[in-house]
Image 1: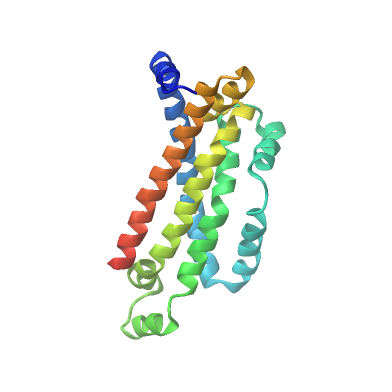
Image 2: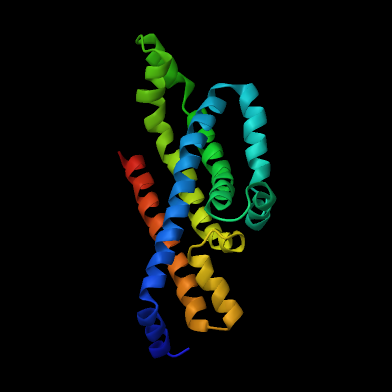
Length: 210
């Protein structure tokens, strides 16, 4: 496809493209935020409760193999079309890597470190906040980074249940045989995922170096 036609498409549909980016970012960001708020406490709980770990982590590991489109399709008869079912589906997709990595991060904190903290008179909550959390943070952040990239990529499928976003450009480009529209949507999704990877990866590396 000539560069001129690609640039012409972007110039002619700038408002639509910006709206699609905003919808995609809003959907992905909301799903990731909810998954972090739910997944981090679940991972922390599992790290301190073997019975919870055997159930929750096993279920999260199994859930990782479920295709994104299958999860989105399952939401359709339950919640119908639109933003809400897409948000629920993407949140469910983001939870497993966050739960698993948070669990691994806290589980792998050396027992001798927590025992020393107890000997100094720290409470359980203080140990989690001031001792375990800084050590577990890089691993937990890796799970959040993986979830972010997966959510951004999977959010393109939300177009099939009326979730909007950049998936609309990709789907419409395929149906209309419009290569400019298709490539614009695909390139923007890839760019958004790359930015999330770089930003969150940098945070994780800084945490390791600290």
